[in-house]
Length: 270
Ligand SMILES: NC(=O)c1ccc[n+]([C@@H]2O[C@H](COP(=O)([O-])OP(=O)(O)OC[C@H]3O[C@@H](n4cnc5c(N)ncnc54)[C@H](OP(=O)(O)O)[C@@H]3O)[C@@H](O)[C@H]2O)c1
Image (cartoon, rainbow, N blue to C red; front, side, top):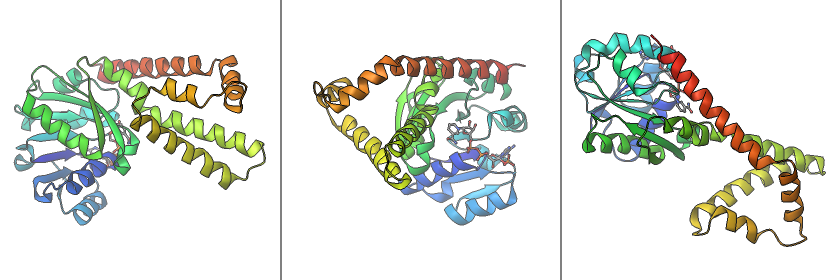
């Protein structure tokens, strides 16, 4: 598969690294990156072809990946639109809708939209994917091949659900960090030192997540199993329920999804 990236920053680097680890050939990958030092790094680190502007060779790829910031997207699309003629274009930009990007590209692209998350940087991401009706099975498989190189993938069949994906997994790492921070604070308040609290909180998240992923039981069942009557876990969960922590998290996700839709409206206008 010949892939061209527009934008060679953090996410593009994670995706390129993941593809190469999985046996992709560096000569099949091109990156358009404005910064000269960025191009040098990409060529040195990955052995890929790094160029300043999209040329006919790089445009004639199987998958064109838009990996620039959402605010840069419109200008980028205007600059590459003359070279777009039926390619499958995958955007990883937060908020921006496939229909808006497709319009900026002159209506000649088959659009796929993806919402990865930051653990992709260490190959442990999860990405929500949506493809418009013009995208066939072979093109979907190419998008899947790329994103599965940095973690798991989940397809949705309605683009609106990408806002839900953003709310759960796109923004999700920040909620996990928030919870870890709170557990560290709580541990320190009980007398642990900062290193001890950090080690205990992070390892608990890693271990409990792995257990939930491997177990056939639901998270609710796993929680009930560690909550003995009159025990310490029950005391903590009663306190959380009294503070409606679960409901607050549900409301937080709704706020993230609403903001995603709003960003889509703002960024896609015009
Ligand atoms: N990082 C994440 O966890 C994450 C998660 C989900 C989605 N995303 C999405 O992924 C996209 C990329 O994020 P990132 O963290 O990789 O950003 P980034 O590190 O800033 O990478 C974007 C790169 O594209 C370059 N660029 C800008 N305009 C260009 C142009 N016209 N032609 C070629 N290159 C151009 C930028 O150069 P300059 O520095 O000169 O602007 C920068 O090097 C964003 O849209 C973001 O919403 C990221």
